[in-house]
Image (cartoon, rainbow, N blue to C red; front, side, top):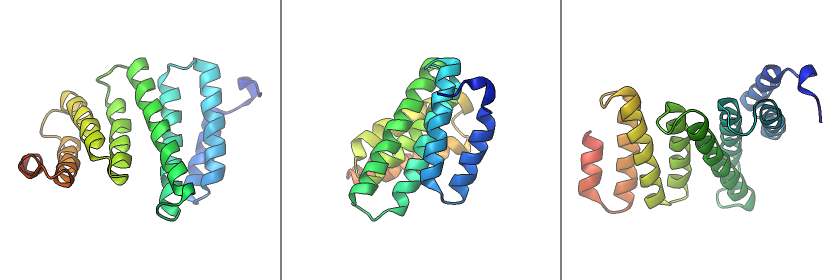
Length: 172
């Protein structure tokens, strides 16, 4: 592969972001995949920049999934890849920063949404609860990012028929 000396990772990241903004998801995936390879080569597997690259790939796959017909093979594959990349991002952030770092919660929230979309409500609840625990530690109980998570949690609990718990979460 390329040696990192003649590669501007930030430039590739910017080009990939522009691809995403332009709806050029295949090109963005290719560019973000290269960025991930270069970040791993430069920093090793456990580094916040690697977590960020995984998260960016998850984001593009999720956006791609949302453009494909519901329930189609392509949509399911893109959804699965998004989930895998967000899980890798959460793991890498947890192991390279700390289990309580807000970046971990960012990826967990994205995982929670994907689980919610695919009607895996129990797993979504567990994921949102972990993100909530981290965000309460990082920002305090009254922060907007904490309030949003109570809302997500309430939606999942309603789907599970746990209406009393859902009402409590939505009231938080």
